[in-house]
Amino acid sequence: MPAAVLIGAQWGDEGKGKATDLLGSRLDYVVKFNGGNNAGHTVVIGDEKYALHLLPSGILTPGVTPVIGNGVVVDVEVLFEELEGLEARSVDVSKLRISANAHLITQYHRTLDKVTERFLGKRQIGTTGRGIGPAYADKINRVGIRMQDLFDENILRQKVEGALDQKNHLLVKVYNRRAIGVDEVVDELLGYVERLRPMVTDTSLLLHRALDAGETVLFEGGQATMLDVDHGTYPFVTSSNATSGGAVTGSGIAPNRIDRVIAVVKAYTTRVGAGPFPTELFDEWGDFLTEQGHEFGTTTGRRRRTGWYDAPIARYASRINGVTDFVLTKLDVLTGIDRIPVAVAYDVDGQRFDEVPVSQSDFHHAKPIYEEFPGWTEDISGAREFSDLPANAQSYVRELEAMSGSRISAIGVGPGRDEIVTLHDLLG
Image (cartoon, rainbow, N blue to C red; front, top):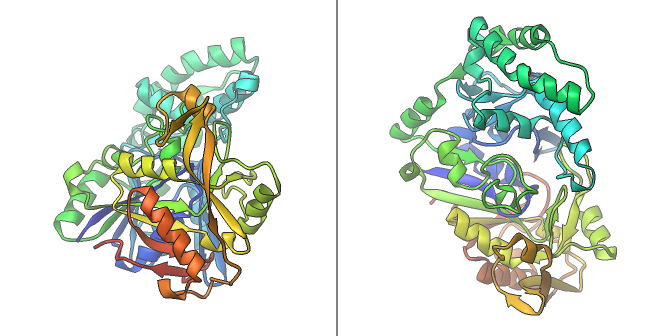
């Protein structure tokens, strides 16, 4: 049975939770391998709507073992808030497993995130202020706290003391904030130990054994390709690897175990936070996409920036991730548009770029070169076969497929769990 990676092909919010849910009954494990509670998945099951921030969306599927991998940074307070919220709605969360090597977000990470962003002024990156970046910075600086450290109070205290030696100087002398006490951090973290103990394990070994036993594992990325710290629109990116390669380092499985790479892409484009966005709309069509697509962040509630489909970005995502299948979501949002523009290339100071420019400056100044395709007015939410779609909708999908670098294997035609058209087996 396969190991598959599921990632976003744009700037996030593409509907990865829906794609995971589509595969749910065939999965044994769903693994979150990067990020923290700075991104959200929304899953609609019947009349119920679930917003997940830190937990893998597979936690909503009975029989699936959800795993938080070593590449994730965990805010334990948020973790238990989410778990308690799901338990209150009769969702079984007892199978959750967390890597002993996952790093922790502490109160000083959250504080530093907020004050640093304010300090940047006009140069703000647009972080969520949840401590993600500072936690990853500590990881790379080798002063981070890992989940396993919670089970040895002496080590935990030493690590917190070491981290705060520097951070309190920064908070007090640069940002004019109060110093954070070692005891308050340690005591808060120790308060979670007994609840965490049954969840924390060697998840790398767990997943290797699962794959050896022929079980199906889905590695679910947070954020998306264009927010990857190495391959995205740096510095307007997240602090981890949100591309398919991150599944390897973020979970402890070998590259040759991955069989499929599934990328989720919207039928248009959205972005939250600062940074370049070539197809961004500032007119009534931007408002149309926002309203029809309900484009507000699952985690932050922020209005998303909206724009037309960007084919060079899709091709870039296909190449960077080794995409085998695209899942095209929110096709229904485009219903009622007479002519639908698609960016097929960019113009940068009179020079045509058919691919995403490597220069940040060029990409910042890129103007989309559009081709227009005929739209449709028919309600497509009831479509379950490709042939059920209006002819113009079928043509639009095929045109996107031809210019995006990989086949389109599923199409979202509405927010509901069953509102999807399947063209190819995502796991075969």
